[in-house]
Image 1 (cartoon, one colour):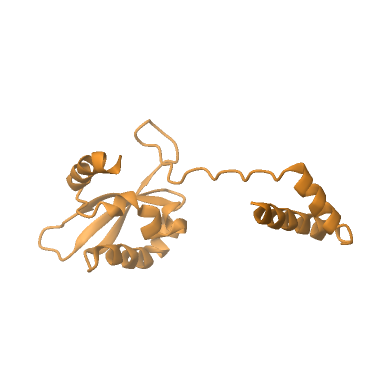
Image 2 (cartoon, one colour):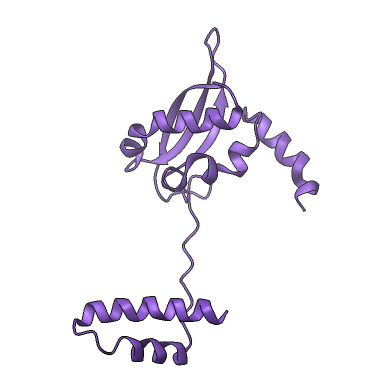
Length: 154
């Protein structure tokens, strides 16, 4: 599937200035999970008479200040992807968290809820942690024991 759409992705990303398509397709790996959760790349522009390119990222208004503090780290990560100092600065564009169909800013997939362990594993975990007096600690140890037991059985 990747080989079928590779040419289309490359052509579409080059219209926005992205010579390195990995910047779009692997944004979470390049920027890091914390930064990728609050922004995404929009375009790469090349100013006249300037050195280096300008990467424009999209974020929500509430996250813009947090992103501003992380820009030096993001520039380093992006330039490491290119292999040289291709990006000289990053411009931040803000939008509302929800809005028109084209303007919605959903940056990260919703986390998947973990599957509950089977009842027999939970019963075994309860038996093993029955001697713990503190109820909060016992509950935490039950979850830990259930995870360990289920991984051993798999």
